[in-house]
Length: 265
Image 1 (cartoon, one colour):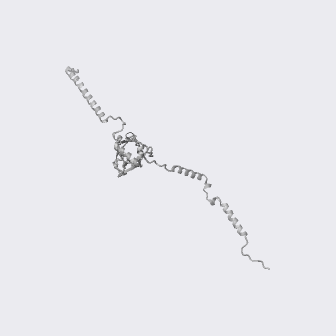
Image 2 (spheres, rainbow, N blue to C red):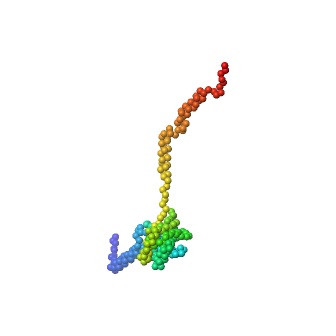
Image 3 (cartoon, rainbow, N blue to C red):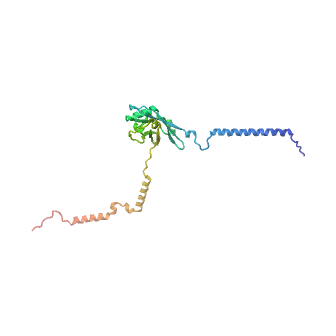
């Protein structure tokens, strides 16, 4: 039986040749669209890069007050910027003193007034900011003359508890004493030179319980190996006690009876 295969017409080959490049073009455009979508969703971050949440932080307002009548009237000095992430950090963004504030600070220093700062009572941890701010502020102060003569150079320390809650603030200047040195307003009393630090409580060393128990076990083992040491006082010195008792009995029997009769003639 013979099969007869008729050849395809030339027009069919030409149609297939035109359709094939069209299909390849469509597939290439689809792949290009998928790649663009993946790049857009990645936001330019490589694997392992920190996310926006990890890089986010929060700010705590820092205020100061220096008044001639010694009545505190706090105004903004700057903000404490705390950032979390792989390497938590804290920085300070401060305002410059205006010409009016520089003149007032020198007047307060001349009458030996006070320079005060304050910060709100907050948690210095991003994950606990939802708990909100506690009522009140934490305040510290130095002599205004020390602030002037230090050329606005101070050290601010934030003290926290074990949970990260802000419980105290302190400020010192360098130098800390007032010597009556003249200071130029425009040069030395415009920009703050501040060192900021956070001090958390340090855990005290715990008792050496394991070492104490180990010593007790060694002493117990030694006593178990030497049962002679576990004997009581009577078991150790019974012979001395018995000898003493016999000696007392013999001494009492050798003594003459008291109140004996006299010999008669």
